[in-house]
Length: 271
Image 1 (cartoon, rainbow, N blue to C red):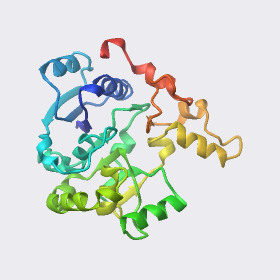
Image 2: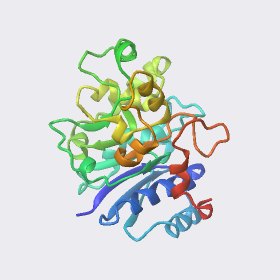
Image 3: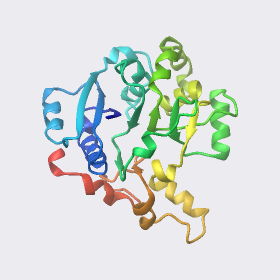
Image 4: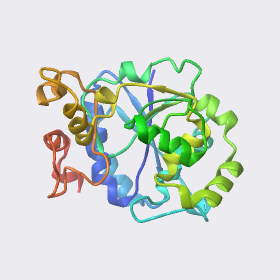
């Protein structure tokens, strides 16, 4: 059975998407993937370029997202309307899709994803990681007026229970919340999911499925040898590397130990 993958990209992220999807394909050679691409500005030339640079086990399915759907929603340069696509994706996907793995394009799939993809939802809507704990978790709960059972997930890697989400998403309610509460929101898509669905998340280990350099730094600060994360640990254990925030491996000021994994799968022809 094919695995369903969800991405959302624009013209500026095509080469990073190709790098990510290439890593997924190479490290999962026994799997076939239906990759649903949410977009608003890809043209035929972009699609031809993408198709010519993906491997045979990748089947691309494009879903056009009209930006007028998001009129009035908060938008800043760093977070364009594409961040909202994953919120409403269950409404746009075919009825046949009941489960899907969303992947940001600024990540690398380092190993086989079968275990992640097939995890039991255990009655939840999402399977994802959180990068925050303690005081920041408390602060987010206070900021968004939610209870102690809500957890703030990183939306860059998440298995989505599309079948159930499709039945409960209230688009009008979500848009009203965004428009009324934009002033208190920081990461708009994550804030929305935290507010509405933060109590229905199965949390998984970010070291395995959402590892970034920032996490490594903080983890190693409070961990004694020989349990610190180094490149040997990453090579032997990690499944997904995520280049969170502004610390991107293709930028000159990148800081961290994970840069080489990006360029292992990047090809100049992706540009």
